[in-house]
Length: 621
Image 1 (tube, helix red, strand yellow):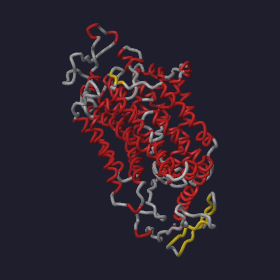
Image 2 (image 1 turned 45 degrees about the horizontal axis):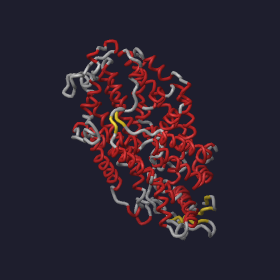
Image 3 (image 1 turned 90 degrees about the vertical axis):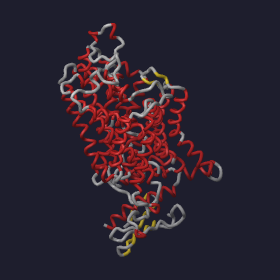
Image 4 (image 1 turned 60 degrees about the horizontal axis):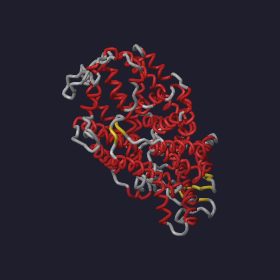
């Protein structure tokens, strides 16, 4: 049989069910080392050459594929739809003009979110590789893969702390009286006030504090006075952290065959809980006012630059762009999977979940504001403040409070859990792809996952100390900030569109899905999306503000230095790798620049490898 490629055709000759020879038609096609692209195929039984069953017909490590395509969809939903959809988007929508915020949000979704989301999945699907090896299409810029690995490693390290806190709250919810609802506990101060209403305020109570805040700061965090006072480890939270890492390990250790099944529960059950919480929320007094605050349009906000920055940053966070995990998930797809359609479906689910979660959150906040007799702006929170202060306070005002608390924190745990283990999957995939089949070792995947989890757990121990919250904020504010993700996304578009070639990549996608995507994608990769990314990136730099805790504690100068080191550790991977490769090459920049920038022989070799693998499988079957 013959397969057409862009530069010729590939003939596959079958020898009595034993071998297949990959012979490019004509004499001009040679491998990267000058040898003919000839490979041997397994016998009909499927054994690989050399008797190893761990390599494919071309001598490369075998790659798993999803048992069903829905496994891929659910894994992407589980990874991309996370805590930010529930605790960040609703607050940003309320803060930035209500329903008006959807205008910049949707514009950036179509100009930046979906194009890069599709690019990462399609690149992984075509190259059948993780976040590092996919950039073999442009070896000079392979630092892009290293940068994404650094970012996702940092995310895996600090993100799980939210799950540990959520797990701790979930366990403590199984009490007849919620521990954060009373002031008669060992961690409470004399200033603790159980019930506080604005119209009951008296001068002697002006310095009073809520039992919810005291439980969070004095019991869960046991927070010290600053970053320079790490203090002791909170052993209860550490045990929750350990239990969470154990769950993550056993979700990931066997690969996508098992992960694809687990996400059916972890990705869908939170929607059931959200619906239950919405039904409960809208039946509470004050819910209507809360929802109106969420949606009420303020058209003057459109003229503020911060609104557009918030919209862009939220999209890159919630779509999990620049982490390399989407590339890893796409690499397990069938070659002819319609990833173009998948990208739009997943974008609809992601953004739809964010918008829907706003009704859940603000119906509850409206009820809480009504009960306390204050304006909703006084109770609206985002991030950990919503999850561990505002919502726990709201459930204490409801009948059967432990039930609603347990439901909420169980949902929070599941929302973060699948994002966490898919992030670990993406990191491990990128590492294992660096080792070819000849380095195959039994249980190497299980060992790699164990090492990754253990290393992250050791780093996490710094976040379960009394100064742990300050360390957590450093990671959150710098290591996986909007700046690092925008920088990564900008270079992904530049390399694919201008180094590899947007038209060439569109042709590759057409080979996979059977048709060319709408030209809008090519225009976005080439012009629109890089401009959007760089514009928001520059706004971030111009509007940069030093990190604080609760707008009170200012980090010391050396704390900011550590933070910028975390940010630059990924951002510098790209330029440093370019300089390193040019420095190591012989000749002038002009002479050594062309081969890495336009590696035609290497690109053709990769194409033949991917396309011929599909063809061989069809011959053998």
